[in-house]
Image (cartoon, rainbow, N blue to C red; front, side, top):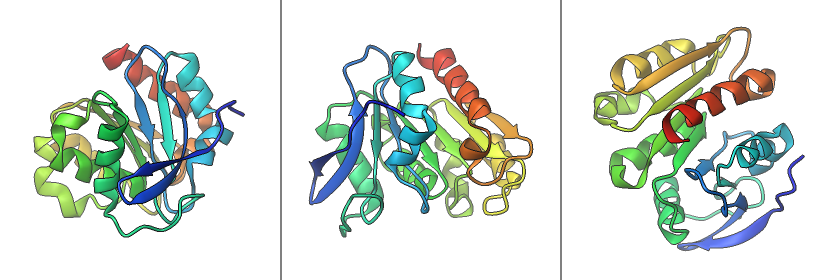
Length: 199
């Protein structure tokens, strides 16, 4: 487990629980989570350690009403934008599994200048944003479980077709939280993407 410890920060009107280590040289990475998980998931899985050991500043955040962040009425994409600007994170890579992927997409659509890259993992809300996908101009990595029944691989293929600068990795035998089902494959694909585009 990572040596990062939870702390509370104020983001606009919201108090957000985060685990972060930002004093590293490479491109910063913000990790969101799906509805059943939290920032602690990335700690327990070893993702935070993998990234920091590779030199990437990290911030894993509990979105309002999840984990240890109290509920807050502000729209989630607004919170993500404010988090980036308040902490002076220079065009971070956003990692968004499931519902977190939808927030990442909405952030890059509304404030493309703030985002350096996207990692979408079993993201939901794809159809709603289908017409805007072609406008995404940052490197994008799509990592999907081959057995995902919540956001089937069809959506990964749709994203790959529509997003010009995307690459796609289907993890055979993995479900919706493919990072939990096959963490070694998850970490390998994530770091290969980051090292290729941002090392």
